[in-house]
Length: 517
Image (cartoon, rainbow, N blue to C red; front, side, top):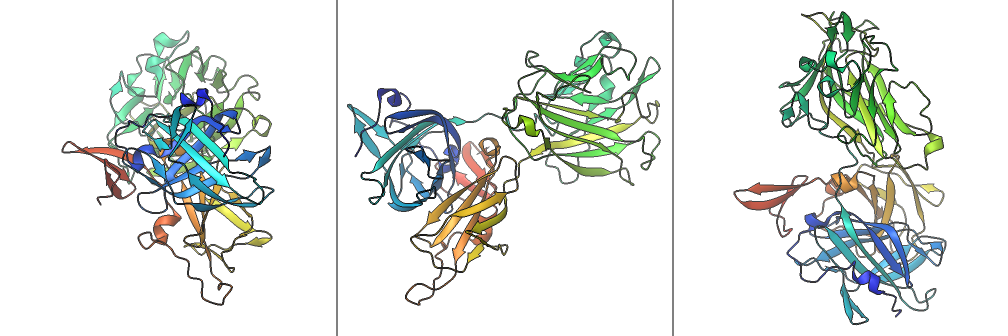
């Protein structure tokens, strides 16, 4: 067995003296250093997902490479974890799907000694480390030791701030959002007291779990319509001429702390709820359209409306001018993002979102009794994480709403699957489960580190075995198909009568990770 550990890695590993942790505590994304053949690969990432059976974890190491050859992803679907966070797994078959198409066996080493130091496979709420032994005698003359250690990614840089406009409002602005009260610019003295243009409302969209929404209204300022306007950036009020876009705009600036939203995701769409009521109550008039725009940029200044060429810094945009419903009621609006192909290799850094009562600056109606108004609720960025298609060789596999079916026998050479996901940032990982004669497909998008959402599909092999006996895929009895197909895990810690519980979807766990309901 190769001894490949260095003293640097020792500083990344976790002490065996840890407090009790649960499955739900450690699920998430981890960034850290991978060690392989004495080579260190900083900036590596792994995922820990809820397992396909109760009280287990799934480990994912994306895009594993050995000797410069991509072997696909390492996915282990049935890891158990002790109360002190140590990982273990029965020896299992692992298919590495790269050019070599290896069928290997893999173990998790509970501990490993090197240079007088002991390394362990375990996790806490903030760190995770794992030591893997991969053996494939035909191609690999001796086992490979793969080791990862990293910190949990727990930031919120994949979502809009306070999309439900809940919580306390300070000076008529909710956390994460701003309007004229906090504006800047030469004309700011004329608009900063417009506190009634952006207020908290007790009306909520149908089916909301929240208690509040935000109300935007148009107002006349010095005889000119001032649209109701809110943004997660800052308003620049530079001119009393509403249509002067060079001076009146919303902007995001990396140097403008408190008035920008750091962001690193690649979402597929922007969804929000709106109740738009034009001042003249005419939902059919083309001029009566409110507007939403959200733009993802690199680490640079950006403003909306644009008055210069921002093509070098724009990564994606979702924008819409929308009319009121015939009944002037609530509507759910979904707007897909359009990505700038030329900037696909650039990293997202900020997001600027704007809601306004009219598509035109100074447009709409601002009468005292019936101004244009827009109620806003539950603005959310959506990351798609499902499969569009799945193929094995040249054959497309059909999905019947419960699982994918293959008219073959589960065998030692299962072939290489290929799939197409429905999300810009979605990626798929395959876990071959010889014990239950099936394959699991995990689909994860950028927001997993924050939301815990992912989808897992099962591929069943439905033909007979080589000896003519019927192949009955051995699905764990306690895990129904319906539960497996769309597993969107949201982890929430809840304190009830002084006792800590973890809720994931409709399941409840105690602090040790044992399911209680």
